[in-house]
Image (cartoon, rainbow, N blue to C red; front, side, top):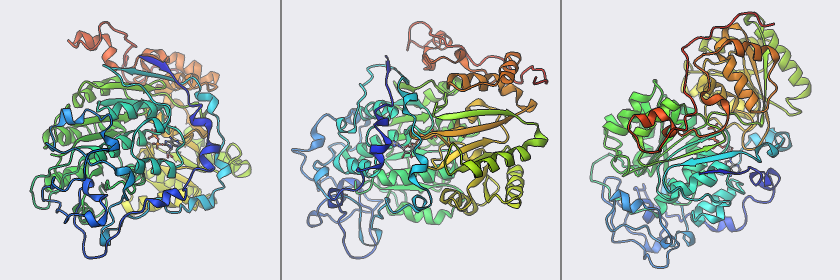
Length: 608
Ligand SMILES: Nc1ncnc2c1ncn2[C@@H]1O[C@H](COP(=O)(O)OP(=O)(O)OP(=O)(O)O)[C@@H](O)[C@H]1O
């Protein structure tokens, strides 16, 4: 099925999003129940929203949940159409989620473990004038193409009201000021609520986090009651969200906490570089959704402090990165060699803005009868980002950057007060550029893999708040990070891979806002010329004549885009070679090409 949709209603628009919708007096009616007393024990979500008088003695994390205390099921709003999870999981036997969540007070306030309001004041808003960040250009999205493929694809929705996510979650959506679902949310949420596995590709900044969080939270709220095995000190999350970097895991955790506020669903994060004992203590207090980086999770699994036996939902954010050569062994270990239920028993969701065909093929091992969703062309950049490429020799890069920053200081970036994110290739290069910028009167900080986690987090905070409005970063900051006021991304050193470029520039131009991306290009980047020119052309950007000429000479680099760059079928199952391999997913090939050519482009070095 191929349909066309538009961001116009997302556009309907930021003015509406930023005005009028926030906390209503109604929203305060849903207050978490509190109880005094001592140290809280883990209470599974199905028991958390019960009125205090009806509250059973809480089971421990290692004890089985009691089914006998479930509130009545009659008249539940959840008695309405359910996803097919019960049909596939075999969990919980008699367990049907209690009804009436919507009317109950939510939260998991238990003595010392009171749920903190995650919608606390964000001091960055005091530093930045909101107006500075509202350069909206939704016209660019009117014709964004959407493609779905797979069996029996559930129809998309146009509004959040059409999806029965539950009152507590709906309230949080309003608190987040989300007026309408973005295109990826319109399609992905109904697909996931229907219990289907999903491989979803949508442009950077288009709301993928909520697209996988909402169905998970809603599914846990209404899913079968978990019957957790007895195993001392081992916790049994119901959902696992994996992401490639610590900062991204922290961000997903923060988002998921907002979405699940007072729903009774508890989200915990575990990532490397931070003391494990603190994370263990947090886990022991109970976890429904575990957000983690792969390395730390493997550690927790090997210590038998986490079991994946009860996992119902597995989401991989930046899924192509998670399955590339660096991470694949760890991901396979987690997903295939521990005690996680197999595909078809658990529900699996893979999300990214880029999804190379060979990674799709790998990823399909983790999925069962999945739906493929592409919003915009797979791996495309959004038109909201104005892309500029400038030819700059290595030796001139610093002075060129200085010129840009001076101009920006004088005029703002596109008339805005700007946070500027500068990508460089190496950690040493990042430190050295940061030092040089500071020496030259431009407050900067840096984030890269050689800094301690504390330093990384401090750098990000300082950047977000505007205290140091320039962040020099390696690829560790390329994916997923949602920093609201980044107006300019500078590729001081271009990456070798066009998909990395797509993710890097995607740190600006998010959620319907405009942004600017400038790349310094020279002979060293020749292998990127063709794919960069194609990508820019496709995003309606002006491609410099010298880059077009270079691209014409550089045929065959590894970054050649499959299929010549037009939107079309991008589900690898449509690839004829896949079908030759014995699959009967699709009869006949709609082969959009392949990653052709070897590494290294054959280009002349003159850039006339
Ligand atoms: N329905 C919505 N209405 C308004 N804003 C939204 C909506 N959904 C998400 N957002 C906002 O859009 C921004 C980008 O969302 P998110 O970080 O999930 O993007 P993404 O698609 O995961 O991007 P990336 O590919 O870079 O990881 C966030 O600030 C988020 O709060």
